[in-house]
Image 1 (tube, rainbow, N blue to C red):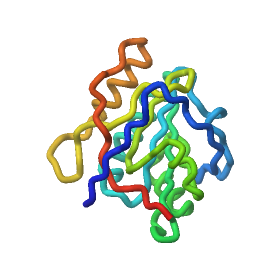
Image 2 (cartoon, one colour; image 1 turned 60 degrees about the vertical axis):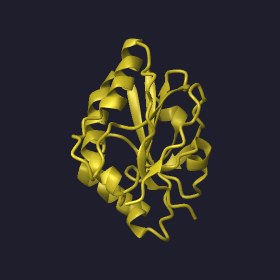
Image 3 (cartoon, rainbow, N blue to C red; image 1 turned 180 degrees about the horizontal axis):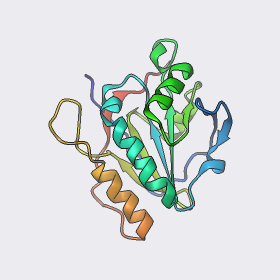
Image 4 (cartoon, helix red, strand yellow; image 1 turned 90 degrees about the horizontal axis):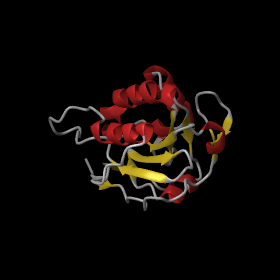
Length: 184
C-alpha cells in the first residue's frame, strides 16, 4: 500500500470555487450553494482506496454530527475512472447510497478541482471557515489500515470543534496519508 502525504495547502487560502455533478442526486451543484454557515469540509476520497475504506464509517459520523451545527461536508473523487472503473460515477453513487453518505459525493472528471486544491491523496481533508478561508488541512486521525490505532476522527474533530466554538485552531496539523490521486 503506497503512502502519499497531503501537500498541506497554506492556511488562510481561499477555497477554490467549483461546480460539479453530485453522483447521488444527479444535480450540478456549486460550492457556493452548499457551503456551511459556520464552515465547510472538502474531502477528496474515492471508492477503492483502503485508507478511505478504513475511515468511511467515521466520515458518515462526521457528517451526521457536524452538518446540523453548520459545518457542511463535501466529498469529491478525482480519480481517473477509465483506469480505475471502481471509481466511476455510477459506482460512486452505489457506495454513497450503501454507506448512507449524508453529504454530496462529486465526480471531478477533469481533475481540475483536485489540482486547484493541490490534493495529493485519498483521503485529503480541507476545512474552511465561514469566509471560506482554510483553517485546517491534514489527517482525520492517526489510524491507518495497517496499524492498531482506532478510527476516532480526533484531529479533524478537534479542528471542527474549534471552528464551531470560536476557539484557537490546533497548531499541530499533521498531513493526511493515503493512496495517490489517480491522475490521467
